Length: 271
Length: 251
Image 1 (cartoon, each protein chain N blue to C red):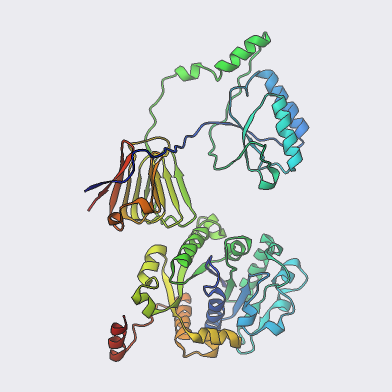
Image 2 (cartoon, rainbow over the protein chains, first blue to last red):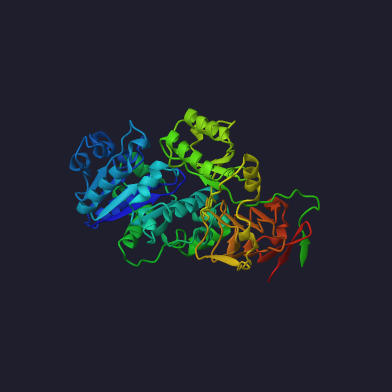
């Protein structure tokens, strides 16, 4: 049986879809079977970031309604044999999702894949609660700024109360993925520091993704950053996070701490 | 060091809880009303001096039907003080207000009476419920407390009117903790804390680090902006002296 991960945040635009694609591709490169599922019905984006927008025939809502079988709707990635996408419907809205339907689809995906990664829509309404409902693990994507941190806190509260695991009295495994982290701005105090975010949210850290133009470039190319530019700093950070998800113990790299002696000198001066 | 935080003439907003009788009708309504009439016949005036809440959460009826039900009850001299479990679309401004967050209590017994005349029944209704129960020696309630071992997240509210709340963790911005007694927070208080919510002026608030949005004791409150900035980030004890909230830095 595979593991179901929900990538969630509460706030929009913090990098859920980018992170879903990057983590999915990183896990698939370890030769594990991965399905990424777009739950953002009506505002789908994962197909674009995965570069599969022209290949969508059936979607999640079709499978839930029984108009299509799951294998018909799954799109295999052209670059990685073990990576699949289940797209969301763009013409429907979140009310098209039903609890029983989602449960059936996730249950079926779990049988075929090692990892089922659900890209949650923003907000705390039906779409987001259904995306997290059947998860085993949650990745909470947060930007180092107060509004994102507070929304993440709200989502963590919901993960602890509204999921099947929580209702069965089990503890949901939660990880913090800090994205768009800019070490210089954090040092200047324009951004929250890693320790501040960890102190407020008090969940374990999965990784810190540095702010980088590589991420935007990859999205526009229609490729997860871990596929398009595997040597870039954000890709490396996502690879690290994927290894941690798979259970390896890897120390967290804090961006900006790897600078050489000159970098350190200039960094100090700039601060 | 002690600082005066409140101006002496603030407004007190208090919470108080009352026990209400809850009626949960079921469909079809005419049969349910018949059973209610039966009960009223056995115990005349049962609803006369009681606050009654209508629980419609199990009932799928439209706005017009709900209005009719309220009128039917009014015709039987049952006045509704609030409606529980209704969808906003079912309610109109003329209806009693929506209520939520009710806590279950033991069932209310309807004492059967055989009224000899109408007048006597009215008197009996005013004296009920069974007065002999009030004369029974009362065991003094044991002070209760609630302990929470995890952080209180934004959007959550912990309400415990029965006594003290202890939180081993932080209270996030946008979260609230409301206690009938004192509040102890072994972490940072970033949200709201309201102690002594049912009129206990001896209640206090303790936190290991004060970053609160709002604090209140016995209805006297203080917003973040009105707090002395030198208290921020410190371990603080807050208590009430008369009408003023006093703050002490603990260590």
